[in-house]
Amino acid sequence: MRLKKWFGTTTTAVLVSSLMLAGCGGGNTKTGGNEGSSGANAESAAPASKETVTLKAYFPGDKPAGFDDVLQAVNDKLKKDNVGAALNINFLPWSDYGNAVSVKMSAGEDFDMYLDAPWLSMNQMIDGNSLKELDAEVAKRPELKASIPDEMWEYNKFKGKIMGIPLGTTQGQLYGLLIRKDLREKYGLPELKTLDDLEKFLYKVKENEKDVKPFVLNGIKADKLPFILSDSANLALDEVLEIGVNMFAYSTKDKKVIGQWASPMIADGYERVTKYYKDGIISKNIAQEQNAETLFKQGKYAATYYAADGVEGLKYSEMLQDGSDKLEIFIPNGDKAKPYTAFQQWNFLCIPASSEHADLALDVVNWMSIKENHDLMEYGIQGKDWEPVGDSSYKVLSKYSFPGYVLTWRPTLNRTPDTMMKDDKKWFDFSTNPANFTLSPTAGFNFNAEKVKTEYAKITPLHDSIFLPLSQGVLPADQGKKTLEKKMAGLGGQKVIDEIQAQIDAVTSGK
Image 1 (cartoon, rainbow, N blue to C red):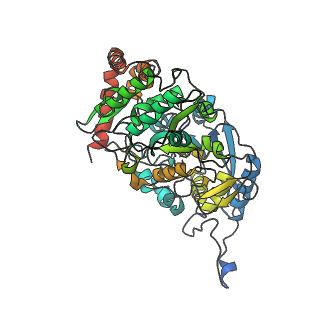
Image 2: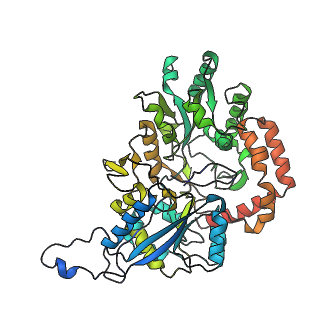
Image 3: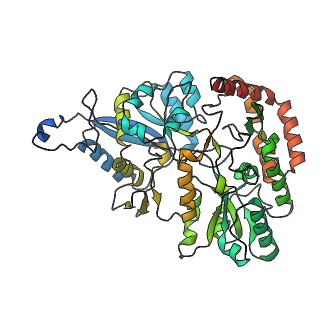
């Protein structure tokens, strides 16, 4: 999953993955948690106990319930495994996290790891030589390297270097809708396979249900609607629809950066959105809607937004606690899905260049890339906070919930809750496998707006004022596109497009 804390656009989402320690420095490395020796030489082979160094980390958000007990258990195991480290993890409020970390870096505070991202201050930190390059260190730590697919390592570099541990679980975006299966069956409709099938379902609900409306989603997520409602949804055709820069896309047909709204591949999606809003299929309150999840749970709507990210579907698992099978997931073109992906992750565990214990911090990251150690931090104390269900699932026993996107998300080690609905697990597992995606020609591109920061700041408000209403259907497709094009041109949007183009060309020129 790619969990990102969005400011202005999109939800947390999005973004996770890896850390850990392969035990000792020098040439006599032992991997924590796997240090048992056999035979008569076991005692003589045991390494001397290391002095414990406390490593300081900063992460965003609130401290999880029960975290102190879990952190103590983690530190106890670090000591048992003779890693030579203990963790001092500090949580800072989201509202001030980016600024607070930047101030700490500028003041020269000694700390050893923190969460950063291109949407925070990572590009500026790299430009200021404030982060440690990690290529050589990752290569020395096999558990860490193996816990993250090669594609994630390769396509999450900055200026050709690993500047942070990419934190994620899914390898690309797969969108769809969560629908009421019981209503589909009530009207004798077959399993939804196509957008035409979906349309028949939505209009059948509108025509026949007095207390259930067709479709709801939070307005801020509506920029995904044209992707979901396009005939090209979840397919790698002749355009890359997303490049990680709001409102813009890249056409592989002519190798040009274009406005998303101008993409011919999803033009049909914009037309459907316009039609569905006009016909009352989409909630008339979509622009202000913030409670879609609650409304769907209350049974007031027949369909809502879905993303195969390991988070979105879990929001609705409580609806199945009565043992019913009333929900299912519709993925447009799901039987032939092979979407483009740049393997881009949104969150990175970074090591400040000023850290006095960078090697040890990476040892801990490697140590946490061993399954039992990863599970301890991610899920808590076994038997108290959770219990395993097979090798890849778990049962929740407490309120402990660690934000894995700051430290522990790893595609190869992830477990899913035993409450995850069958469809959700199917598509989440699909999204964690790199083989199910098509490599985007823009893979490796991360936009740095520094050269056009004035123009970029001017056009950014257009996302909420015009682009979102266009994506929501509130602004009809033809009118919204013309308005956005005119406003973009008047505020220096072409200069931003030219800069995005130049940066993409630099990435693609050697391919």
